[in-house]
Image: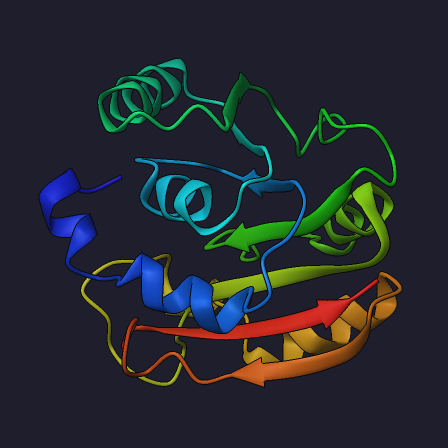
Length: 182
């Protein structure tokens, strides 16, 4: 991860969530909380519980400190390897799953199937990733960045429907987004 102050300049998390999860309700799980950029915004966005997963204990501690300072009590943080294991939430329990900057992995479909399994009926997923059509100040190698169409195909393979591309250019200019339904 880059310096946190630099990282924060890449996103308007509140505006992105308004586009990626426009009707917030219920609980949500975020895969890879990192600095908490979207965790904190999501906790302000809904009264539901935001379960934020990250494999790095330092990131979890950092987000915990920020949530406490902001008085956000609806965040549940877990140090958890969701790629190797499950998502750490009961099946069918989530209204929304957030998968941001992760799908450059070798085989993303199993992770998306886990997300699908975690969702309640009529739940939704949002995907955000580094653009692959322009140079960006951070992000994985261009050679491994998925296209929006790749992500849409993976979502369909994992069982999602109503897949939509979301324009994030005004709030996250180095990223693209997609949403889909259970």
